[in-house]
Length: 254
Image (cartoon, rainbow, N blue to C red; front, side):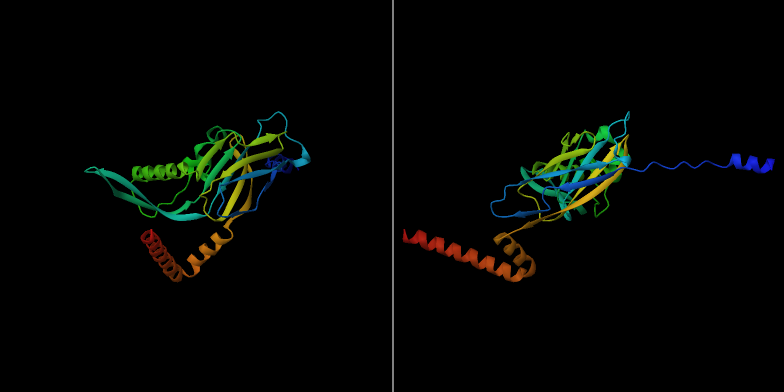
């Protein structure tokens, strides 16, 4: 009996983990239609943090929210230009298999103050943590140079950007953020992923999808180019020739 009591005392004690909070996100627009007059849009992302028991933990570091909006991935080739004899010519190039066509990250604080480099790389939080997947092998310094060039090019057109401090958290429960969609945004299915982070750890994540598509005449032209590329090309050439002939005829009559 004494030996059994000793064995019982030596048994490990298993502590039950406290239930994790959950996120309930939503977006102001599930569908965005692009027409000829489209000049961009503002996407509102909002939601709530549901804590176990319905109470916000007291006496702890406040949680942070990071929202990442991504467009569909695409294959892209980046070319580097060099000046030779006063003329800019194409030099080296590097192709990427899966680069996001659009990437925006909004956060309650700067990303570097919320998580470390390893966590940023795992969840692709921030422009310096994107996984661009080059299709061909190259030296690390070459890959870094081309990756920085691609990010900078898309940052200039508004397709890539960071917005630290753009997420507002009210009462430790409700949050909202605004993300700008530029006029040159590509069409396709976008994802809006929300992360709840505290003490450098991701506690919860949730995703919502957004469809951006062309509408009206723009949609008809895009579908024609995809489904009947040969006929579309012939019609485009015929229209160009016809318009050119008509312009010359009008000039001759003057």
